[in-house]
Image 1 (cartoon, rainbow, N blue to C red):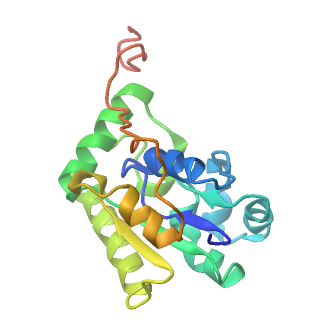
Image 2 (cartoon, rainbow, N blue to C red; image 1 turned 90 degrees about the vertical axis):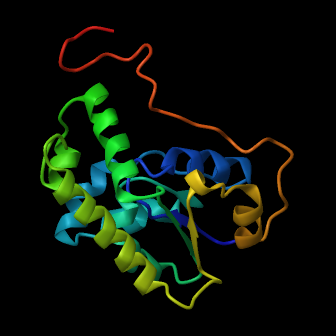
Image 3 (cartoon, rainbow, N blue to C red; image 1 turned 60 degrees about the vertical axis):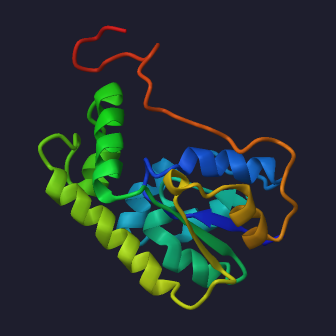
Length: 191
């Protein structure tokens, strides 16, 4: 089993599903660490790295922003890039999520806008640039890097082989956060 596993896909690429998978595979999975986004933006890595020492696996923020620094500090780690079928599919998911959650400082910091609406081109450019940078950084290193797209059918076989663990008996998680049932619509205040 790898010492640490970092999910470095942007949010709305199946990061929640990855977290469930990593817990199912026996990794001590970290809680959400989005409070480190400002530290990641300014290069203040000390607290982020101290936080990472206590866990085996990570996904969501700030890990897509700091994978290079994390790799230097934890050189035996493995990295998983989660992506969607294409940038437009990702953007539609991000926009749908934003409709349920409303404007956030995290989105403003990362994408330049608190809400993605009306900014498809800018968001898709960030998505594509991030994925390209990650793929270039890890090119030729299959022992430490895996690229998965749940939309295209990736699942237990790919994760288990990459992490050198047995395929679990549990079915592969089918997670969707796209349903707004029971969640408040930020614009209307209705459920």
